[in-house]
Length: 121
Image (cartoon, rainbow, N blue to C red; front, side, top):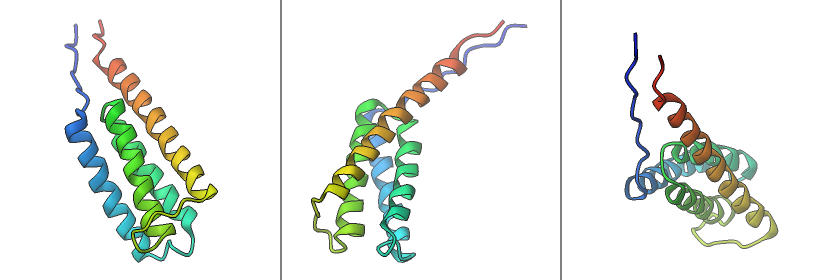
């Protein structure tokens, strides 16, 4: 019995980035409401998970844009607390982390889609 290939398309940047931005905004609001401004690493972990999930279903451009937007939300509302960007060594490390998470997650998502879409005999 031959199975037909399942097509799991990636969300184009026009859909993937807004999805990631909306998810990052909600994550940031929940983290700040939960007191993550006192423990910024907790908010960074939550945003990294958000970036990973959104990046797994979008293109590389959408993933990097999501990572950048989540960094801006983290830097502006968790570290800066008033929407102002705070450019420090720690915020630069957070930016690098979120971009790496975005790139790895989009590669893993692409590999998964290619594996699932392969016809099996």
